Image (cartoon, rainbow, N blue to C red; front, side):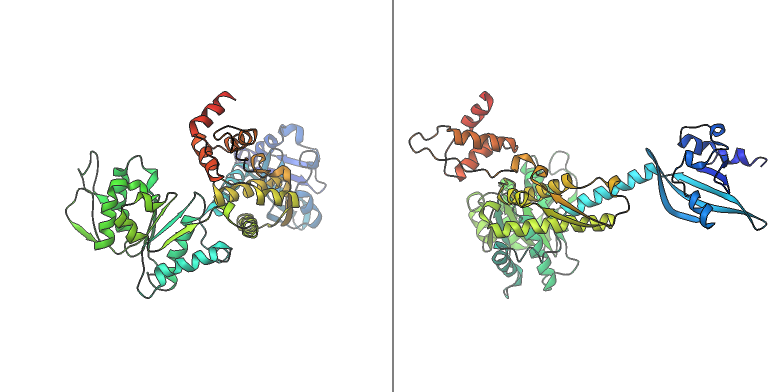
Length: 456
């Protein structure tokens, strides 16, 4: 073979050559290293001693090449192989394989597919047909359509509701409907900002209205979100946190003009504003600003205010979404079933973060019941059964509101103790627990809850 062995030993691919009986007559260093052997220990022995499921075996039988169709496992390694028959002057002499380690590539692809699936599961909805037919959303969506669909032209609006009730989703519904009926163009922007994410209102104002260099220490010339949203929709979540800049927002609504922070030049804007908040905006906005925004005010109820039927619709929606994500990322038809006990636990659980938390719990439960990727093999259709053991323990039982003690208001009864512990296990602090108690009709100051948690 002359210089060929030296050349083959320096390839990045493994090479095996066998005779017509499957006996190894050549092995390069890469192949020997794959199975933790030396070349000398492998030569003259059947390839099945080292590669029990070698593709070469099929080539020896049918004398036809096999290309890029088989991935073999030599734990913990993975490789893809091409095998060819060897003929010399019409006589069949054996076969050879060239294979490449794809473990790192496969792991990277697996991570990418996992990320793609997570994005698919958690992204904001853009197919809203299923949402607008769910219980309370039917009436809310009818009202929302009038914001942009009335004969008098599009109006600004307010959406209120607890965290996770779907305020961003409803704003997107309004935006897509406006495009559908031609109130805004098909490529009109939808700009979203959570005003509460900034450390102070000054930074929020610069993001929203833009700024000129020197307006504040370190500020630079910057186009604001109003300008970016021109011709479309500007969604201001937690709008109450802009505080003393509310007057600038009011001016933008009344005049259709804005000024960048620190600038004297006015800029024309044509923007539909949707303000949202977990607060009662009637109490925290300037009266004039609330009057201009609040002509169309929509309240999104929390999950505990929605019917069991609607919660079941949401459960089925998130199950379908998971099944579709598996199909999109892995081309596997996935069927998810919940046992009656598991279904009851999910539907009756208390979700402080509402729909977003319900979605996360459902996804977690399906994850917990699903087989590992490596155990699926070549299957293209699988079914998983979610049981009570797969549901996060913290929500596996319905939280009963504690009984009110009329004789001793403020006293932490055993029922209230249990409620506090359950809420604390969900990650809620004393202030949130105090708020949750107030929602059930019990007044208990947060500092008493903090003291209880510290001493128990």
